[in-house]
Amino acid sequence: MSNLSTVLETARRALMSHRVAMDTVGHNVANAETPGYTRQRVNFEATPPLRTSVGFLGTGVTVSSIERIREQFIDTQIRSTNDALGKAKSQHTVLSQVEAMINEPSDTGLSSQLDAFFNAFQALSVHPEESAYRNAVLQQGNLLTQTFHQFNSNLQQLRNDLENDVNTKIQTINSLSKKISELDLQIIQSSASGVEPNDLRDQRDYALRELSELVRINVSEDSQGAALVAIGGTIIASKNEYVELSAQKNGNTITIISNESGRQLPVQSGSLGGILEIYNTTIPSYIEKINTLASALITNVNNLHRSGYGIGTPAPTGNDFFVGSSAHDIGINQDLFDNPNLVAASGNGQTGDNSTAVALSNLQMLAVLNGNSTSIPQFYSAFVSELGTAINKSANLETTQSLILSQLDVQRSSVSGVSIDEEMTNMIKYQRAFEASARMITTVDEMFQTILNMV
Image (cartoon, rainbow, N blue to C red; front, side, top):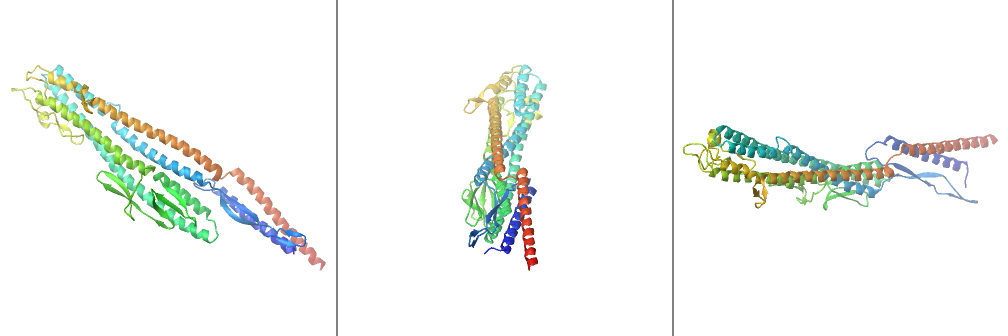
């Protein structure tokens, strides 16, 4: 049967419950700007009623749980968008570096150097008997070979830098996997003790978001609340257990393997996937194209130059202009530097003839690449165009994914973010309820005093 003690207990429960609610409001406000924080809400429920002669009599309120306001579907969409954005962003960054290397259009780019080289032969064709124009040809040829060397060296150095970047990203992935597995264990232990580990779940979700930018992951949660994180079917983090990854270099390619099983992981997205694609496919393709260009230049210039004649008695012939076979080792025949008169301009050995110089000058217009369908300048222009297209594609994808992620963040914030105005409203509501509960206790105390005075 109800008595004053029951009323007092009801007021005490209300006092304690609304104090917890005030604590939660304070926690929300304090973390309004904390990255990854999820708004928390106190769930109240009525305590079991007392059966009396007049019916069931309520006994107050208690806090049933403190709940995170989180939408898992949005989290999944954010992770999916995040890995696509990470890939586009990393590729756009690297391709922009390649664009800066080729420096086109400019006076120092390979296109300008090719034009200057062929123009030097054209100038020689006007003055085939003069050594000064032969020196000019050699100087322009030397500048051209240096440009090839620099471009090739820059691409090779970029690959080395990307290899270091891959290792750095793998270290970050391993660190995040370890953190997630440790948080899993703490979440399981807290849940088992009856305490909902909201802040630990926030930390884990934030770590999962960071991880999703690096590599595409699949996340599921088991019955104990542990997050099972997998890459292409290989679980890398779960319940205080995590698998370290490492980069394995096979020839000119890098693959990502599990240190535990040695299994290769299909890393194709995220910033790591983007870097691997650039390292394994894109840059080797660019190097191959530049080597093809250099090789075609070497072969065709040498074929024409070898059949021509320089200045002398007898007129020298049979000399190659270039040495080497690729962008890495292309160079000018040292014999020509030692004796510029060996530079061929004549096609018949006569000093005034310029047919070889003309042929060398016109080489830029001949289709000598891609099955004799593309000229040297056209081949290089197509390469520059291909690079530009790849940069635009990655930039557009980065912009698109950034907009999608921003929209998802807005949706997440509308559900999980802290609204200061809403928290202020809740604070006033809980404050009034707390004051009313305190007033009830005071009133019951006065009632006790009345009864004691009666005695």
